[in-house]
Amino acid sequence: MSTSATGSKTQNGGGVAAPPDVDAVVVGAGFAGLYMLHRLRGMGLSVRVFERGSGVGGTWYWNRYPGARCDTDSVEYSYEFSDELQQEWRWTERFATQPEILRYAEHVADRLDLRRDIRFESTVTEAAFDEAAGHWRVATDNGVRISATYFIMATGCLSAVNRPSFDGLDRFEGEWYHTGAWPHEKVSFAGKRVGIIGTGSSAIQSIPVIAAEARHLTVFQRQANYSIPARNAPLDAAKYAAIREQYGEWRRRGKENPAGCWWVLNPATAEELSEEERRRELEARWQKGGLSMYGVFNDVLVNPAANDVATDFIRSKIRAQVHDPRVAALLSPHSFIGCKRICLDTDYYATFNRPNVTLVDISNAPIEEITRTGVRTGGSDFELDTIVFAIGFDAMTGPLLRVDIRGREGQTLKAKWTDGPRSYLGLAVEGFPNLFTITGPSSPSVLTNMIPAIEQHVEWIADCIAHALARGRPRIKATRAAEDAWISHHDEVAAGTVFPGCNSWYVGANIPGKPRRVTPYTGGFPAYIEKCEEVAANGYEGFTLAV
Ligand code: NAP
Image (cartoon, rainbow, N blue to C red):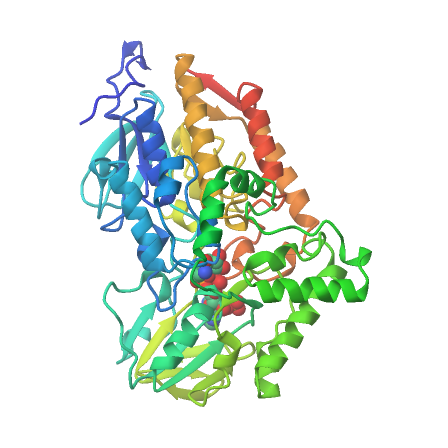
């Protein structure tokens, strides 16, 4: 066991408690866990990371489905804490593939010598705060028991898959896969009748790829989604070199964008523009591709009228691509754009012109059951050799709640969050001292470029721990008042946006029984960073420190 630097002074019923095994346990070796380990190590602390997979990469370790890519530009989707790292790594395409991103995570792990503190194929199942000792006692599924002063959940927002619970799945005689837990070996669709359930980002990326290989592809759609052309291409060497020369400046600009991205937010509201100017703005962003449609008008996410202008435009683009007007109508969403995650695609809509692709609308006829030979819905049977479940995740809270986390007086996180998550800044939870959540509920997380969001959290947590340790009072607790105030601000901001108005995973609508509330912070990355910095500058306002 490593020796801890944090726990030797803890009192236990008048005596001096044994120090914890390590200063910090970190759960997850994705981009959050890797950087947290590096940062805490740099402070001289002992750290143990537990990772469910057999390698690093988190989301990018598991999501190996056909066509998987990031929909943030690759030049923006990397760590900025080390200039050496960002200078030496070379992305090849505008939107990096899953294998390339995984190679990047592996490169970082090797470059920073992180693997020696990571235990792979180890799932943390329980963590309980031992109040007397002031330690977390953590258990894994492979029998490890370890104590730590700090317990840090770096489990990501989209790592708990929404498991298919359709009746009859166990009887299905074909093969089935979930996009979020894809096999490491290539899955062959050649000559097969394939069905895919879901039309979110994962499906929209994989449908064109599967359709090109399968004998027939049947797409089961519950709600249509807005998708923008990715316009992926190899990176232009000269432009990329120019970005690398000015990386600091680009990163700084990203921090001024509501999503932490480099696309430009239109300063004008839709109303301030003429019809011609709106059309030009929409067309320019459509042609550029990527996620810049989020910034087409300053008020697109808060003003339904502005949102309508954008959605009318995109529906016209869908009609222009899909030959059969009935299919085009089914593929055209009528919800607000942005209240569900905007998708990026390569040839998604055009794929429905292929003779070997069928769209099945299940909006009014849910899947009744999986039969021995396929899918039954709306009284019809669809014969299939392979089913792909692209049904998403128990997002944001799922990865936290699948660990049995117990705070003060044995209170479970699950019980505390019965009516939905409550957290101070998405970083700490009242009643759970020394627990930190990286990109937790009520932080901007999934509404931002994830890597800058992760870096901002990791650095804030590390600084907070350093602050507590420097004062000889390692026990850090969020107060109830601070948590309440943050959640009421969070809810108030969300209420003024389009987010509550859709059945999306942002509000938990995809998981039966999940309390419905907007889970990520919708006030934008810059406002959030400012708040976190203010809290730190005021001596970690809203937290109490204790021995
Ligand atoms: P998702 O967006 O939640 O999509 C799941 C799909 O499955 C939806 O179409 C959903 O329909 C459908 N579905 C769920 N349960 C169903 C059921 N019981 N019956 C029928 N249909 C059902 O999941 P995802 O596509 O995996 O994407 C999740 C998030 O991951 C994205 O929003 C994005 O943030 C991230 N992601 C990013 C990338 C990228 O960077 N390119 C790629 C993939 C994913 P409803 O819409 O009706 O609920």
